[in-house]
Length: 127
Image 1 (cartoon, rainbow, N blue to C red):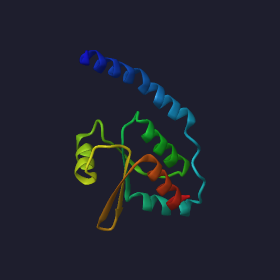
Image 2: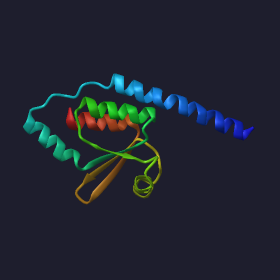
Image 3: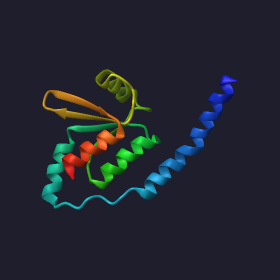
């Protein structure tokens, strides 16, 4: 019985993944307009940020939409298919849970989980 349930959810994921990605593509908002100089400053700050995520995770989609809306160039790190990123997330953040925003401030590194917290942080810092 357990194997039937496992294959059911794998099949469901196979069907839903392209739908989730298509909906994201169609509903992603246009980026915030900034002057070239302002955008360079924002890009420089974004170099200290990285988002650990899975492509089809709905909570990751929510954060990626906010990143697009704010026109931020934050590095996206695939923690599902890239073992190096997965290990970094586990060792640095303590668990493999996405989305997770890695915030580097000098020698200090903060790992922020929860899509609402990440979106609130990005909104406060870049809006």
